[in-house]
Length: 334
Length: 304
Image (cartoon, rainbow over all chains, first blue to last red; front, side, top):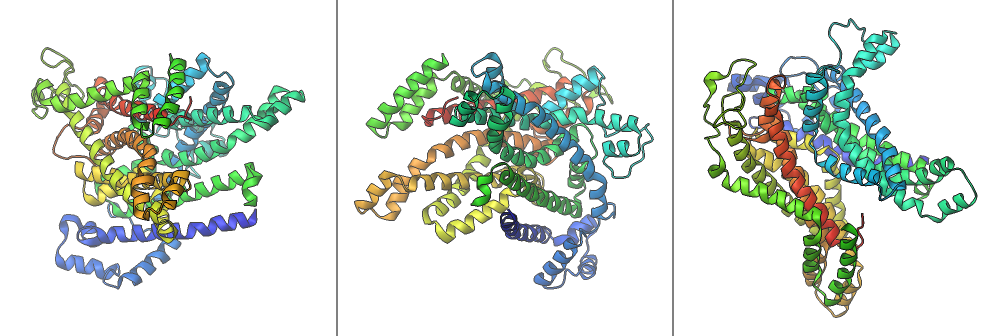
């Protein structure tokens, strides 16, 4: 197992290296370079030269790259060119929101998707099965923002059951320690604050979770159908094991392999989808930050956030691979 | 209905294989009998026709702010004679903008798919044909590209190139490149050990001939299916990018942008947000259904 982990970690190095070069090259590829990006319309040759001196941009490229790596290794992504706040601080403030949203979406997708896929497969050909198949086909095609608008319109604007925007009611005077609002509410025993934060997560979570849900239903159904006809399931049935034991230990455990991989792949999709969902629900997270950074041409923020998301994505895929090893001992041996 | 099609389909496979080279006409025959394919084709046809004939179908100029005088903060006039779907927040005819918007979507879909497809095929073909070190390097490059979520890459590229429809097309094309490259490579690797390749090699054909006229044509099936599905995702991605404000900046009607503009009116004129959404879904659903049906038609093993 240890060798498996080490080998997978070593494979990360070229990817992270390539990524850092790409992001490093990005600012230098901009017309006029970073100085022009920083100054915008106020750029004069003197000012550009001054900026270049201050930030060491007149040094040879490899020196710049080395310094860039040093800074990134210390989690220093520079300051926002718009507000002057350190990018790291912006990330600490905004990222928990997106993580909460992603977890909410994942709970919805996995919690509904795996049982639905399982029962669709066990009752193959019934109305439930056909609905699941057609629904998952249509679900993949519905753009995140369409669903977000629909949910927001019906449940927030028309019915008024759930809040239409934000992460927490501003009137609630909540204490924030970790910036994970639900967790904060539980830690400080301000349960009304936690409950309010959960209410704000429901609609965006469902909107964001629907595409992964559709995919998980499809994969689970296919995987269960593959597994139920295996000899060991028939053996288990012949031994007289109860349905729930067969389901848990024999069918689901073997069917989960492709599902876990799919969930891992969906996480990247969730991060992308979060950008759009947050925009519709005015949800303060990393996605809203990206959108305002685009409008303000705030390259420092964009660069830092993209690096962070990419590294996170790579790490998540690593965890998925490791989980795969836990679920399927055969993978470890290879 | 479905079962009958499947039985026919299964029968068709064998006759197709026997006659040789009949795979595509066979697939087309199966496609024609599949209700999913028909529905997909109808939706796609509708979308394409609207895009082509938009200037004749649209009642007004999509850019002219006809009813601007009646728009007040928080209030937009609803449907009335001559404006069946009402007007947007700048007093422009919603129906005309919707019809014209199909042109942008179709253009982005086709151009970015074709561009991504050709670059992807080039890289994937090189990797599949040469193997070894070329394969290794190219696949690490695609690993790198796939290590960032697609929309994020697309956003980054569009920001670098400056927001416009052209940037959106290039960005989406680049996101699609590694997908096509991997697909063709994988498909070619699967063909490499096939009997007909061995046969071609044993009668002394040149490597180039084997690759270009035997392996590549036989590997294209999954790529064509993927291209059809990519048309759908490209249309959605383009709408997403222009929803985020990265599309054209000159007021040309774009579904994603119309959605963004309608966002603040959800309390008063929610329909303005739903029209472009429905248009996007129709366009994307058409290509998705067609792609899925094509996958079934080309792959005899595929059963739902």
